[in-house]
Length: 450
Image (tube, rainbow, N blue to C red; front, side):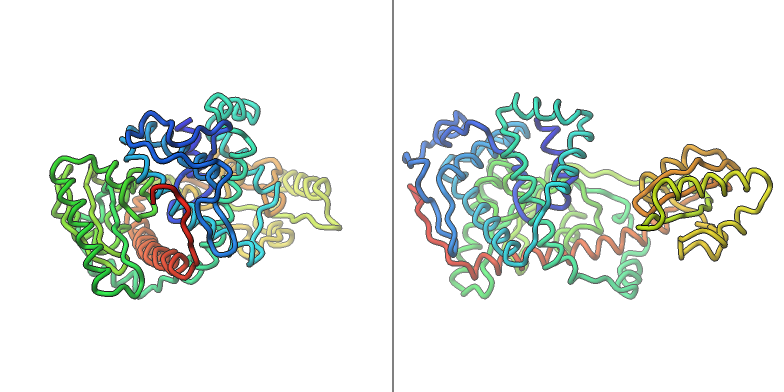
C-alpha cells in the first residue's frame, strides 16, 4: 500500500502544502485509542460526536478516527515511531480543520472535480503502480481501504490543489532579473549542484503574534530542540509537535536542490553534515528545526535532443477524426513520393507556431512535448515519417530530421534557478495563506482530553 499512496501523491500534484498524504481512509476504522502504537490511551469519545466546530461546519469523531488510523498506518510504513495518541489526534484534527476551511472556500468559489477528471487521475495512479483498475481496487481492499473513501480523498486533494493554484501559485511571478540575480549571486557555487534530503519541524507563530506568543513558541521550539539533541527521534517529534505541512510524514521534505530550499534553510544546510540537526531558524512563520539526512552531488546534464517537424490537422464540428487521419495519410504519401514536407506543412498545418517554418519544431529536449507526440517521435529514425497519430491538439504526422547529444547543464541551471525562486515564493506564500485562513476561522474544540 505504501507504493500506492506515494503514487497518489505524485500524480495529484504538489499537495503536501495543503494536507497530509492521507490519500485513503480505512473501510473499517477502529477508534484511534485501540491502535497498539499509541501508548497513552485517550478518553473514549462516541464516534458520532462532534470533535470540532469550524465556522458553520463540523468535524466528527468518526472522521477523526478514520484519519488517525490512516496516519498511523502510514507512519508504520515509513518506519516512523508514532507520537503519543493524544498528540497525534490533536495534530490530525488541526490538519482536518485546515482541510475543511480550504474545501469550504473552494465550494464557495465553485471549484469542482467531475467524475471524468477524477477517474482519469485514479486510472493514472493505478497505471503508475502497474495495476489495472480492478487490481488496484483489490489492492486497496486488501489493505482495508474502501474504494469510495479513496475516491473522496483524491477528489478533496485535487480540489485543494486547484484552490491553492488559484489563490497562491497564480499570484507568484518570477522575473528574468530575479533569475539573473540568483545566478550571479550563486555563480560558481557548488551548492547549486547538490541535493539535500531534509527533515523539518516548524513551531508556528500566529500572524501578528504578541511578544508573549512569540516567546511561548520559542520556548516550545527550544524544548523540542533539547529533546532532539538528547536523542529523541526526529520523525516522531515532527509528527508530535510540528506545524509544518509535512508533519504527519515525520517532517520529511524529501530530496531538494540547494536552490529549491527556503533561503534560511539554504544558508544553514551548507555548514551541516549528514545527521546534523540545526539550531532554531526564525522566519515569519515561526521557529524551524531542520535535520540533514543525506546529500548528493550532480553531474553535467547530457541530453539527447531531436530535430523534428510536423503537420497538424485539428478536429472540429466539420473535420472529424476520420477526415483528419485521411488527410494526413494522403499528405504523407505525397511526401514519400517526393513532394516537399516543408511546403505541404506551410499549406496545410494548423499549428500556428510551426506552420510558417515548414512545420519545423527545432531541436527539442526530452519532456518538452506532450507524451503522445514524444512517444511517436522517439520511435522514428532520422528521415522517417510517422503514421498519423492523435494528441490532445489534433492529428499529426512527424518527421525526425536528426538527433544529437548536447550538454544542457547551463540551460537546466537557468530553468532550475527560475523554478527554485518560484518554489521559494510559493512555499512562503502558501504558509502565510494557510495561517491567515486558520487564524481568521472560528474554531471550537470538543475533543476529549484537550
